[in-house]
Length: 58
Image 1 (tube, rainbow, N blue to C red):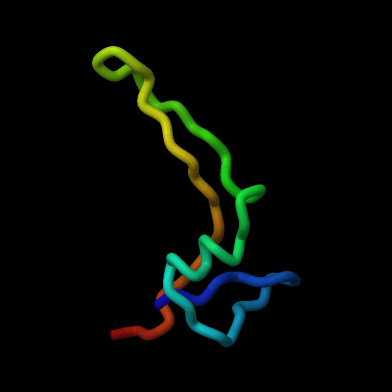
Image 2 (tube, rainbow, N blue to C red):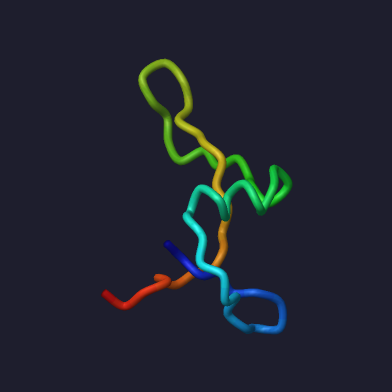
């Protein structure tokens, strides 16, 4: 579980999974990044950058 940094630089109080956060961000938050040539084609995927911290300190 993670807690995301919200507007105004404050941490949200509701913990969520990384999957839930990715779905909440939506498709426009993700950018396609190509990192190298693979065998026969370029290796690429979509990434989003969001500052988070662990929901608990265990």
